[in-house]
Image (cartoon, rainbow, N blue to C red; front, side, top):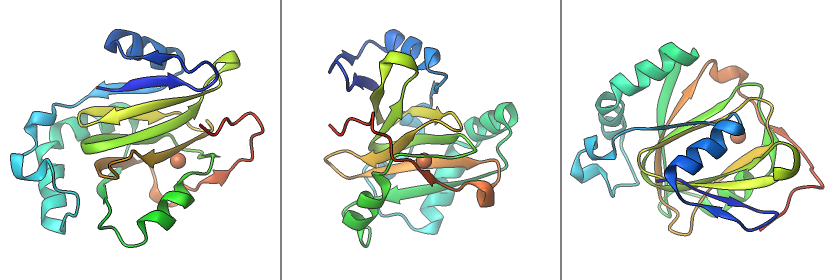
Amino acid sequence: MAQIRIRNTNERIEDQEQVKAFLDAQHVLFEHWEPAKLPVELREKFALNDEEKAQILSVYDEEIRDLAARRGYEIWDVISLSDATPNIEELLKKFEQVHTHTEDEIRAIVAGKGIFIIKGEGEVGYFDVELEAGDVISVPENTNHFFTLMDNKQIVAVRLFIEKDGWIAFNVEDPEFIKA
Ligand SMILES: [Fe+2]
């Protein structure tokens, strides 16, 4: 289950109702998919072939189509990252840049862990959302953020897009960004 850390105060929010309330107040969509639906052999597999990716999409087909119908997504895919990914360190460096998109950024974590760093409104400042299997999150459009992996460097996530070509990152140099 997701946990929040507010960078300005180092406050952590672990209670799931409070996590949901905090994210609601920040206009960050937070939902849950049942991680146990994923076949056991895929739960710890972070280098996936096309067949396995298609299998994941079919396991969560109902959840994907429900989200797509509610929020207008047209296409979706599966991304997997781990130490086995070529140039993973370089990729992570590239990820760790505050940016925005004109579309929201939605990720459903199906295995492993990941973390979104998001700029909250007003005095909240930057906060981390630590995510694990079953957590579904969407960072609103035009909101400063980045996504990266946690120490285990393993994740499988479903991504949904309204229009993939229109989904470009605009880097932001924000003096208010607190690194750790
Ligand atoms: Fe992004």
